[in-house]
Amino acid sequence: MRYEILEYLPPYGPMPVAIARSGTPYYSAGFPVRFFKSDGTDWVGNFAPGSSRFNTVLPLRDSENVLVIAGGTCYIMHPDNTSPIKIFGEYYDGAFPLEDGRIILQGTSRFSIMDPDGSYWETGRISYWKFVDVAVNGHIITGQAISFDAPYEDEFVPFTYDIDTRTLTGKRYN
View 1 (cartoon, rainbow, N blue to C red):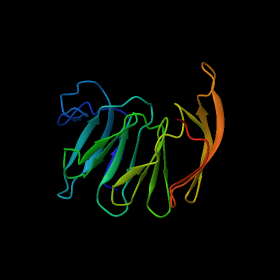
View 2 (view 1 turned 180 degrees about the horizontal axis):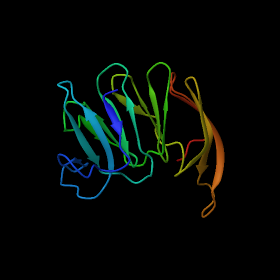
View 3 (view 1 turned 90 degrees about the horizontal axis):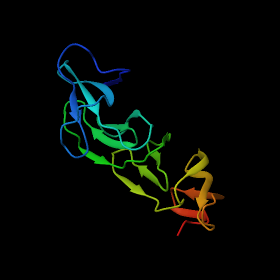
View 4 (view 1 turned 30 degrees about the vertical axis):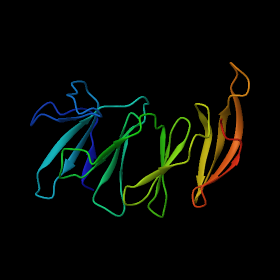
């Protein structure tokens, strides 16, 4: 692996590289990741978080790039470069790597499916604002989504989404 998730920003050595959506300086402690460059050196990225508490790093099978998820915001990075290739999302709560190299990203109202090369597409809105009991079996996502049929009440309805056919079974939030 060409990365290491750090518990804290290193107190010594070169300054970590602040990486944020807007490109503006980021001075708080975010999600620290050490990258190992192909020339044998390394650098630490301090990734600005989005609006969730979900942090992880996942390799992309068909490239040297990795997917860094910092507080729900996704950064596609190459370990040799301190600038993100792409930044997207803000509210991702989970990730499900599949055997075929795809990654299912769980947001608060929709899913994003990342292909092994880093390209991705979205399901469209399925839930009003939350999923529960999400499970992935092969290419099928199941769970409960909030349907906003009654004001001020959370009504969960079952759904099934087939990522191969891009077909939703169950009620879609409108």
